[in-house]
Amino acid sequence: MKTFTGESIKKLLKTEAIGKTIYLFEEVGSTNDIAFELARNGAPHGTIVIADSQTKGRGRLERKWISPPCLNLYISVILRPTIQAKDAPLLTLITSIALAETIKNHRAEASIKWPNDIVIDGKKAAGVLTEMQPRGGKVDFVVVGMGVNLNMTKEIMQRDMGEIAESATSVRAAIGYEVDRSKFTAGLINELQIWYQKFLKDGSNKIIREWTERWGAINRRVRVEFDENAVEGIALGLDENGYLVLKKDDGTSETIVAGDLILL
Ligand code: BT5
Image (cartoon, rainbow, N blue to C red; front, side):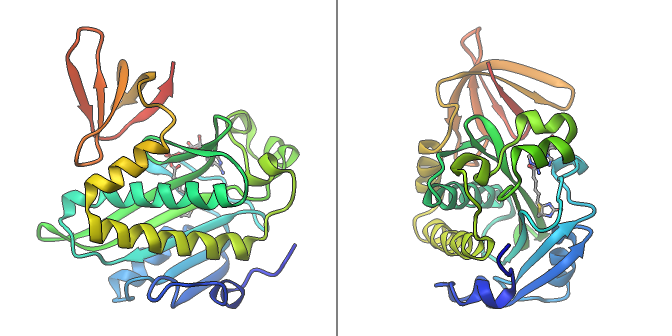
């Protein structure tokens, strides 16, 4: 396993602010919690927290993110965009695009599963957890957390993940060889910078178009589960806020802010 240090990542960065400061820990509870605390105490835009392992890695709704040591990437980035708080979910979209592009650059076919999963061959390889601190109607800061399964083999997944192993994969499992974590991480940060700049320059419509091109469910029949409810229909796309628009069987459409999407 190659060394994984802030310096080994930094020397491959082409960014200005993002990744200028990298905190790399051996083990933390959750990188999002550390980054949130740093941001609250004034850490600048672009500050990054990475951990080799997490004991309390989180998904949405306090779900667990399985985070064993020495294998994967657990990273949180502090962003301070001058945007309305209602536009913060768009940062999940740009992060998903950056992840999909980085995985593709490693020769695996990645697609995006609304709202925050990256899948390879229909199995989850990465997830995004975006958490925001608002100030008035605007964003004070956003912490974008990414968990990416890089070097877990099928055997390790079966050993460490229980029944989740069936629906999970890793970049290594897809390409058949070990991924250099420093290179992957630097590539991801570089992509994040590109898509973040595009978002600030070109606005949400362009980002939603780009996201949709990488989406695995467009015009597919899906079920979306949220808050003990479920809706079925054809996935039409995203509205200008990044919310999912479904066409139901009765011909009406429904807009869903967040949930779990299942391809039927
Ligand atoms: C996510 O949540 O997919 C967002 C995961 C974000 C994790 C990163 S790691 C760095 C940063 N620090 C944190 O504490 N979190 C972020 P969600 O859509 O709610 O999916 C969670 C579900 O994914 C779980 O309930 C499991 O079913 C599944 N899962 C858990 N660990 C997994 C893994 N390593 N690979 C694939 N699937 C996993």
